[in-house]
Image: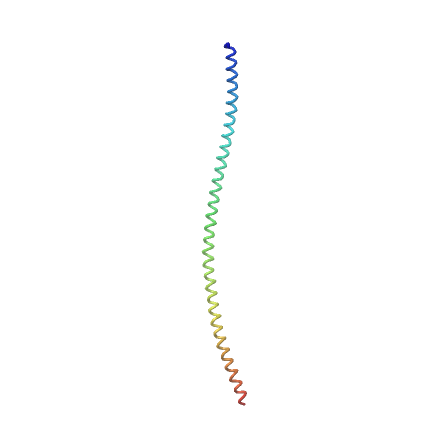
Length: 116
């Protein structure tokens, strides 16, 4: 082979390699763009997660407060129920005593009516 052909062959090889390296460079640029988008997406996800954690914490505090408030209210309701039950029991006892007196008086009235 003479020098000219060798030079042309080397020139062709250089051109081919340059084209291949250009394609590789393009692919790396695309990959860099993808990684940048992934990083931006990840940053957005982290911000979203922080917001969710904040909201969950707020909700937990609200639920805790509601449970506490309702617990006190339920205790008050049960106390009122107990007082009403006790009062009804006392009224029932009084009604039973009055019924006994009425029955006793009815018997006395019958006896008195029979005596006349």
